[in-house]
Amino acid sequence: MSVAAVDPGPVRSLVPARMDRLPWTRFHWSVVVGLGVSWILDGLEIQLVAANGYAADLGMSAAEVGLTGTIYLIGQVVGALTFGRLTDKLGRKKLFILTLAIYLIGSGIAGLSPNMWFLWVFRFVAGLGIGGEYTAINSAIDELIPSKYRGRVDIAVNGTYWGGALLGAIASSWLLNPDNVSESWGWRIGFFIGPVMGLVIIFLRRHIPESPRWLVTHGRSEEADRTVDEIERRVESEGATLTPVPKERAMLVKAHESVPFRQLLDVFLHKYPRRTFLGLTMMITQSFLYNAIFFTYALVLENFYGISKSGTSVYFYPFAVGNLLGPLLLGHLFDTIGRRRMIFATYSIAGAVLLVSAFLFHNGTLSATTHTVFWCVSFFFASAGASAAYLTVSEIFPLEVRGQAISYFFAIGQGAGALAPTIYGLLIGDGKDRTPLFWGYVLGSVIMVVGGVVAWFYGIDAEGKGLEDIADPLSKVDDDAATQAA
Image 1: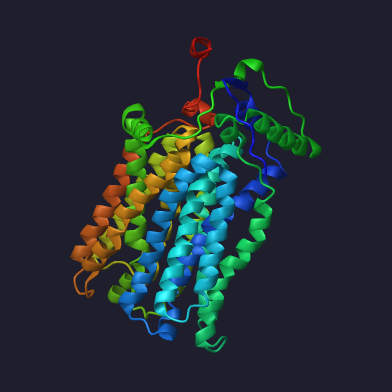
Image 2: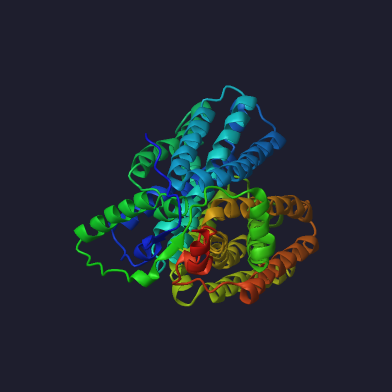
């Protein structure tokens, strides 16, 4: 493949405006399906690891099973940090093909593991791929979807994580039943589900173009124009009529090949400190709450309500459905009512519902069923809010650092959230005293409400706006600067 020529000086481009004025068509559905599968795969992987069908076959202890999950999460963080920078430098398309391929290899070979150490190595590799997916995919979706639909699409796609988790739970319940599949093969087949899905999707991704916005800011404006021309032809072939974009909406851009780490820090700490505070707060608060409840709900059901280990899986299904429906049903409101109002509402309502359940739990009023109902209601809203956190850190920073912004905020959020299961596990104890966990739930609800309040005061009204209107690309120049440079 020949290397595309880089524009030597500033160029005027209508590419962002042309992309944002497009109506919704089959092209956009292909982007959503081709790229959005990443979160389904992540949810699937987490649930398959949590089901630990491999433990008996490979002779693993409970601690070693826990470490298997940790290794996967560490791989995600390393993958996000590594591929986040690469997707900003090399392009979205190269990375969303590469990261999916890495995941396919890691997860598929893990299903052939002869021992624990082999499993750990390839769980880490699978985590690398999924972590890279988070950065490349969020960047690509936000840059390819018209501004009118960007919020609902991004939020819905992020929420499909729970569809994957539900799929993983259903698959595990059947595959790990020795009456259906032998113990030594059931968990291995489970690990092949994701790669089989990925093989289908990777061919679809080959037909998804590079982000024209990324091309423009990296000195490849002619290629960007050709890409948008082709997209517009596809849209018009479906019967849509496109009006010309006024020339005054053109953006003057000078190629910006890479961003040194020092300039990256300047963007986060000096140019956009309020946005950095907003992104960190949203990612940390939602991650803490999710990890606190998701990784300990089974312990709560076992220790306080007497549900058997096998019986706790039944309660996971409505929990996952509630998490899946929240982003799907509420997502469009982030584009109509607005980002700031909806983030405040979803975070605050989720925290308030959890707080009410904390008092009822402390009083012994709840049963396993009613407690699960409260979790479902709380996380119906929390799931939409958590998905909006990923949308926020993706759209409020300049295009040239979008992948890295997602990767750093994701890594910090995961690091903070990783403490939650340990803290809440200690609070649960042997299930004889409800008071410590009560205060844990109060803490979780307050943390979530704080995230909502921060969003209310620091949030960006990004609904309906082009990405370039929310944050100027670093490569954007004004006419005076271009004249002086000439």
